[in-house]
Image 1 (cartoon, rainbow over the protein chains, first blue to last red):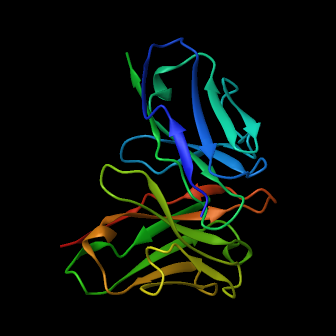
Image 2 (cartoon, rainbow over the protein chains, first blue to last red):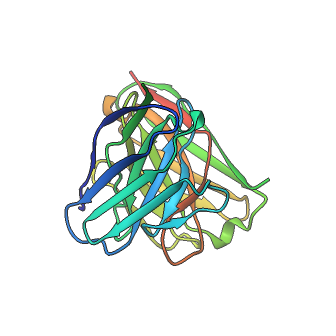
Length: 107
Length: 119
């Protein structure tokens, strides 16, 4: 199985900051990498697919990059509604494993 | 609107069984591959199982293989997860999720989840 490792596990930032979350795969997954946002008590929401493609309706301050084993999710100017937990997921092969999550908190 | 709604969760004793359902609406359910994903209390997301659009292909996480069975009834627009020989570590919120039709696999529609407690 492909293991996904996110860093950091938690992150404190302020409104307006730029933040970057990293996701590393245990083997190459080409660009088959998705990012989800989850708020407490809610279902995950797809933000980015295929490493860098923005899901419809997602604000352009979110961006993704990477290929192979190393990927990043960036938020250019944090808004209050962005404070949540973010998960990467590889979709290269079953089982479609998730990273352990990165909790983004308000500083 | 396009949605999936899970049901069937509850409190169950270890070793017993439970069947979860996921009702789909406002989309052509029979065209989509469907997944179950779970989240233990305070933990991250764990992919559980997948079934192809026609029910012919199924895959499972090693943690549930041999105990859980995913199935679907396209005439009823419903996805199921039969969970047998439940363990404490199966305690989680279970989400059903739709895999969209693009070549790059991603889960675009999620339900609100149904909580399963094994105790």
